[in-house]
Length: 113
Length: 108
Picture 1 (cartoon, rainbow over the protein chains, first blue to last red):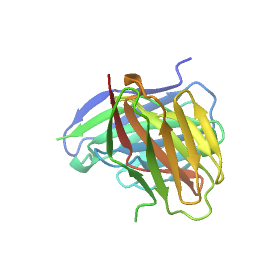
Picture 2: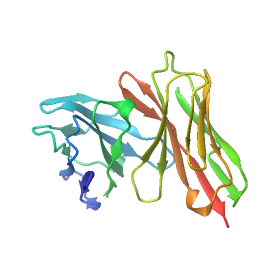
Picture 3: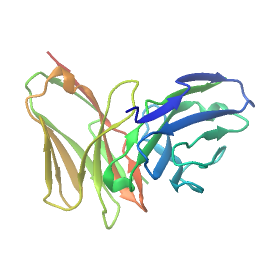
Picture 4: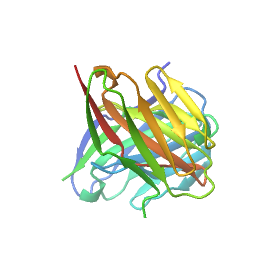
């Protein structure tokens, strides 16, 4: 039982490049989330999805895009990477929302230079 | 405006020295307060959900309590393996708003 799997674990991007952070869960959870975590700051919600085909913006969506074509996968797309996007990105899932607790992946550490 | 404030930012304890971590919140109509544990280089791990003032939850050496304005995570006789960052979060419009966390270090 893998839970929430994020790839890659580490990545260095140059300013202006694009990339996709992958997130997959095998628990048949409807809800999925993308957070970023900066040093000394709390986790900030980027985007979330309540089911396949449905996505919505969180607190800090600018510079990112998501899609949810299947229940299992929730990729996060960075277009035109900027140094401000240097962060650790966490994907999480939940069966029915926040009240049931989130299962987090192990994160992707992204550096934009 | 911070809606979730955790204190202290860091706490160093000797093994066996009990203490408490604080999480205060300003959201109205609390729909749930959550505690997570995060080890270095890993994602947060869910610990507890509290819904109403007076509620308590326990897991091993950890006990979480809730009042109308704050929550406490009590750690009784901690061990080095309890060292981690403890995150508090509140539910707002269906999503979680996280505090910055308290980094706990327990020395043998």
